[in-house]
Image 1: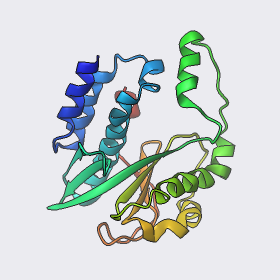
Image 2: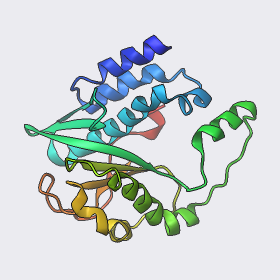
Image 3: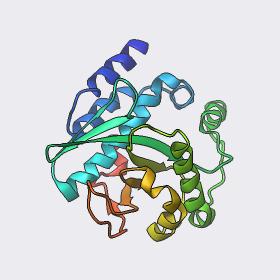
Amino acid sequence: MQQTVRTLIKQISQYQRPAAVLIILRGAAAVPNDRFFNDPVFKPLLEAWAAATFAHGLESLFGPAEVRLDPDRFPDFRLRQNEFEHEFEITTAEKPERRRGAEHKERAKNPLLLTPYEPARGQQEGPEWVATAVQRKYEKHYSATPHLLVYANFEANSLDPLELANACAQWAVSFSSIWILWEYKFVQLFDSEAFGKTDRIWQSVGLDPREQG
């Protein structure tokens, strides 16, 4: 499996269309979740999934794109579109008490394990969770000014882009743009030089979740 992971990472470290990256990542589908979410060797594959899913959506707004992981690990990935290359960092926003790795270990022992489903809480507290994730990235004090993609990995009845923007406003100038990926939708929180003005409307990434296993 280690060799397989190295091969996958090598493949997705070359510029490719987002759909092609997602097909390549299916090569890791056989890895049990309790290992996939606990072994750091798989982290680049998680980031590549988020990057390719997001880039697939951007194609509907700005035309064909290519994406790749960065071998030096900064930035997390690069996006090439309309002859411009953009550096992106990725972070994940989750419920503060959630420990995804431990959760999958427990589920491997007990497939019937239930976890709280709290969409009302996600709607109310989600903007704060997203802001916390953005702040963590801000505190790394990058010498460059990367774009930022936040994967909001929690359930919510809805997420208001304006509330998200208000929660993250103090860090807006620290990134070239800030985007949220949530439930196969994405939104740009603030106007940016690279991607223009935002209407703060969720856009579909154009993928069927049932086909992304």
